[in-house]
Picture (cartoon, helix red, strand yellow):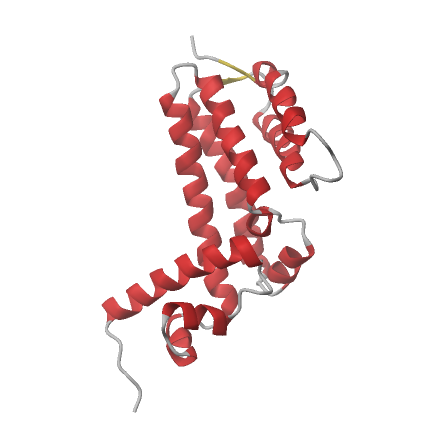
Length: 196
């Protein structure tokens, strides 16, 4: 006879699965983060997994949603802490650079593993994930209360392009972080100004 789970049990299992999945995805990547690994780490059966999630990808979508929310919270905290909002914005981008560079498995949406993951999702979920990624930049700009000197879409494209350096293979481009910081130093004050 199978164990019955309360709503509270299911909520707790879901939370543990999300935390364990995020940790594994960061280190192992999408393909190696599988249901047996997750259920063993959380201490549940595969049957219990399927009570909470219909598919592995549903769990990954929830994890990515949480990761994106946390990125915005952390980036915003850098902006809020600094009296000079452009410098706070820059510090948040530097944190983001390190986060992307340290955990490319989790953040590199142009990798073959991400392609595999996204290919298993309905088109509307992929679009929603991509839009939320864009929205993070939009919200960070809005929360910074900085005045844009170019159209917002252009600013976001420029920031995305600069951040792309975090995903370049370190062996391919020496001095990636120096290049990143140089570009920030010589770009941000052309993209933004402080509110009057």
